[in-house]
Structures are given as C-alpha cells and as structure tokens.
Image (cartoon, rainbow, N blue to C red; front, top):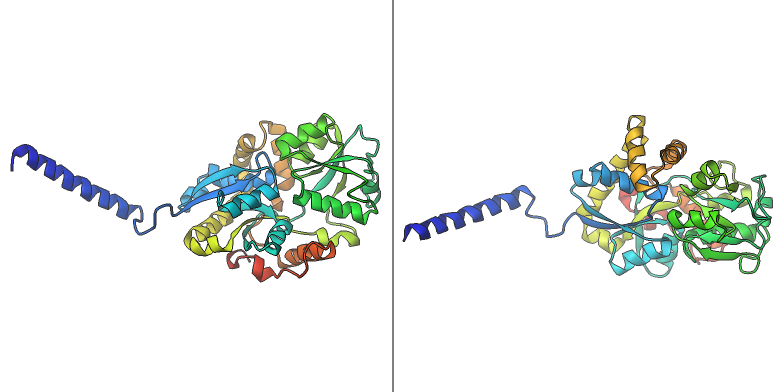
Length: 341
C-alpha cells in the first residue's frame, strides 16, 4: 500500500472509532429524535411562565430534553396542534381536555401547572356597566350589552364566562357579544382602546390593565377563596400540560424526563432565593416592564404546582355535566397520568 493510501486508511479508521465513541457517550442506544418535544404555549402569559423558566435555566436540557416552544392563541389551537402532531404537549385547561376526550381524543394531563383559578372579569372603566362591588351576580348582570374579549371563540375562557352569565340570569347568546382577541399581547390593547368592553383576564392582563394601567376594573375575581356556593364548580386547577396518551406510551422515557423537569421547575419557582432570576426571565418572556413583572410575580408565584388535585378534576367534570357539555363524568385516573397524581 502506498504511504498516502495508508494515511487515508488510518484516518478513516480513526474517524469511525471517534464517531462510535461519541455515539456511545451520547446514549447511542436511544432512537433518533429521543428527547425532542414540541410544546404549545401562550406567548406573553404567566400561565406559560414555567416552560419559559425551564428553558431559560437549562432545566429541560439537564433532563435530556430538546424543547421547542410553539406559540398558540388559545385552547382550541393548542388542542389542534397536539391532535395534528405539530406539538407533542399542550398547555390547556382541564375542561378543554375533557371536551377533547368526549370527542374521542385520548388526552391525558402529564403535569399540573396552576393550582388555583386564574380568571377574573376585567372591564374598561369607560363602559357604562363597570361596577366596583365585586359581588355575584351584580357584577355580571351589569355587563348586559358588553363586547367581551376571549382568547378564541370556544375557548375555556368563553365557556367560563357563559357559565357566569347564565348563572347571573343573562343569555350568553343574546345579552353580550363575544370577540376573539388572542393572548395577552393582543387582548390588553383591545381592552385599553375600546375594541372590547370587558375581557376574561388571566395574568399579566389583570396587572397590566388594573394595577399598572388603571384604565380598567377587576369587577369579579375567580381567584378569591370565597367563591359563592353556586360557583363552586369553578374551583379548578385550570390548566395542565397534556398530551395524547398514545404519544405518552410511545415516548415513555421522554415524558418521564419532562415530568422530572417540571417538578424541578416548580421547586425552582417556589424558592424565594430565585426571585430575581425569575424577574429576569419574566422581562424576556412576558413583558419588558420591571414594575409590572415584579408585582405580578409577587402576587402569583404561589399558584403553580406539579401535582393535579383530584377534587378539582371532579369539580371540572361536574361543571361540564351541569352545563350539559359532557354526558358522563370523567374519572381522575382516566385523564391524569400516574406520574402527575
């Protein structure tokens, strides 16, 4: 063999050996694409904050996950993304997950997220029906004739608002008009500039419009601990990270890694020592306004958690049954993955 050919052969063997060692070091027994997850979330919203923290602080990477965050406007889009395969995991409300199951989509919640109600009804101060009592049903009946903003038509926020209107004695199809205004970055300007009179708000909408902007009033807050008896079915966990069970079964290790990452993320969020870091993440993920982000996080960080509460799942099922949206109760063990119980 000529010297040049010999050098080429040695180089080739070396390259093959290095490649083999690299594959072994990276866990070469895993199939291509293992650990890759596409997650549908809501831009500029506090409810999506844990995923942004896990991404920014390297928690996903620590648990061998390659995560892509996909922006969606509301629950229907998030669910459609998972069903179509354009996302593996969605952030969605428990009622939407139950409705999806009723339509034959085998959704399961794989991680909790918020552990308390998140919505309130926020009304532009220029609207004739704005009230300051905070009482039910007066605060809701005063909305007759209002244009009410929701993320998307048919989303959980609309279903909750329809429930409130019905319980208050109004007809949701005749006494108000629902308008799809998207996630907080588009919903807040719509409220401020009068495109809508009111919005079913979730953070940072309340802080932006009421506490900071002062152009709107929080007329009825579901986040309170003393909901009227007739509204107890609205005491939910509200949103969870969910996926198709077939996908969870097919990618068991990846989803276990996701659950471990989310557990660590919620522990990170709960640790007061990390507050300044969380503010820095919030400035990039939610709003470039330190006063807003600081105030919002101080008021809301205790609302996150990994475990999904059985009673609150049953409350959601009862809500849908009483509102004639499903025909049979949804069992906790059917809709919550064992790893999140």
